[in-house]
Image (cartoon, rainbow, N blue to C red):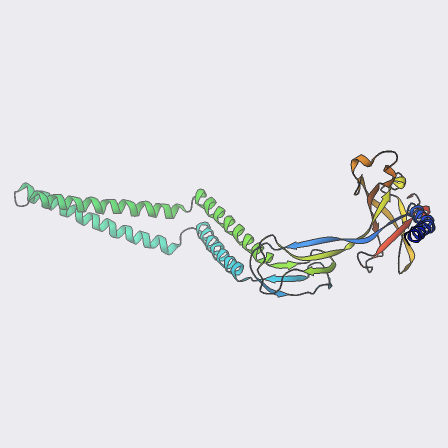
Length: 325
């Protein structure tokens, strides 16, 4: 029984060996790989919960389409606060640029006249207090109080007079510069708040297909977490593996005929990139005997393949390689 099994195994090996060699030889006559698209991961930039999903897995989207919406309440409140501060800074700058109002100047002039009258009265009171003190009819305390009141009113008069002079002179250049800088800072805060609000709207950056939405409504993604994956439909390419024997013939710029199942007409496209390093092969295999087993990853840009699904197997016959004109 064991002898029979060994005989069958030997016979099977003899029959299959030519086929395996043929497959090995045929693999040297073509490049094989798959149709691919760039995978774009969309990240959450804040930790607000998801409040709505506007697409489904597998759906076609265009650039700018809304994918997910995070809760905008907090960001909207920050924006409203920043806008109020900006309006306040703008009003202050406009006030300084306009200068003091005529009504304010007249009010200060009236205050100055009242202060002058009060100073005149307290001066007279001080003079009478001095005369009474010299005649021995008043005490030193009364004289000191009259002198203090006079000096206080005189100082107030000087302050009002200086304030009136400043009003009539107008706003200084330094004040205008400070107010303008405050307004620029407020505008920057508004712009930052608007960006924070916009970041809660996860938009599609390209034309493509939704591969997967990773969060449901109500879930709260961490900042930096991937919330959706899009397959970029603006660049469809073939990812193939080049045997070591063909590496010298496959270079960027070469025109290839890419064949795939379900498409009768081959796609004539150009090699965009070939890896300089062998794929899945250790460096010590670069001997004369083993290096024929090396393979190199290459990418071929495709046109007219936007309707084909990603992952579709494809091949490139070696005898159809032509140099790009």
